[in-house]
Length: 214
Ligand SMILES: [Zn+2]
Image (cartoon, rainbow, N blue to C red; front, side, top):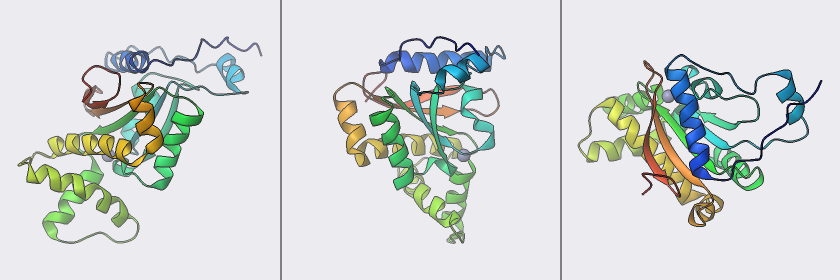
């Protein structure tokens, strides 16, 4: 097997975001390139990885990261939990992606009709929490739902966008490693809201050196 030469690692957050959004545009247009998915790429990556983005998304089966952003092996460091709720393991994985793998971009990916957000809304309206560890997921989405409701937002998909923004803020607040990389201008944290029907990812939040950042 002849390994495919690997291009220089990407260290500019803008460039990383552009690559991600271009891949999403190809997916939306049903014109994917399926890059970096052959045996040559596999062989080239075996000694080391240098992904260009950490993707922290909802576990929803319709949100398969490499498919919806038209990427391949070694491109994305993917962390997914139901409702992209954060805990120590998710934060540690994201910090690993940024500190050890030197990814210049962290993306929080949520979507319309999110079951975790719906479950948090339902549990608030019914005054009843689910059992088992699903409760843990619902409890971690609930602060976003409460703050959306306090702002008078009732539409479920608009509440999803609030939850994405809150997750972006939470990552930067809770992770010292991430916050200092953002402050140094080396890493951007971007929130994307994905539409299940047309496959489009839309930017709804950002920290760091990208357009539209707070
Ligand atoms: Zn979801």
